[in-house]
Image 1: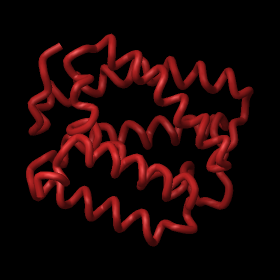
Image 2: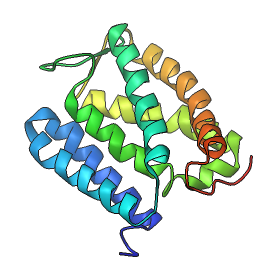
Image 3: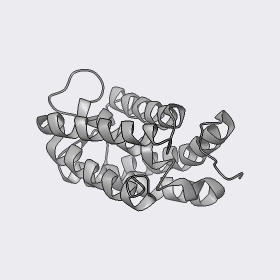
Image 4: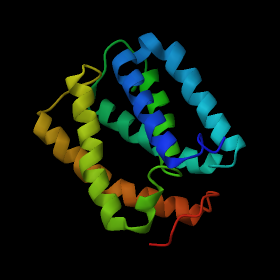
Length: 173
């Protein structure tokens, strides 16, 4: 079980889940959802992360995407509600990375801000190129808005997790 709890496995798992969710969408939810949920349960059972350390990034990510979808910044095909189910599964997978593969960002808020400003817009832009989402406004505008949002939220997430006593020992910033 040590391998499953490792940062490297977590990063690999999340990237595979990202591809499955983005490329398969709701058509492959029967595969992506059980895989991500089972992996998450194993991590909680092994005490590699807590429910609280999952809930904060999971709910925040879904909330941000729902708001952006409601404002027509994001547009998704064939779904009910503000965001599709596959995106919810993707956020659950991504939430596991804060306690494992992204934990190193917790000790440096500037690095966390830079990672959020660059990595998050890139993920959305690649997802758009692969047809998982359409952007209402211009691609550059969306990239800048996402960069600003996640440059702020990434360090804030780590701080919230640290202050909440999420069961993960985040380094003090």
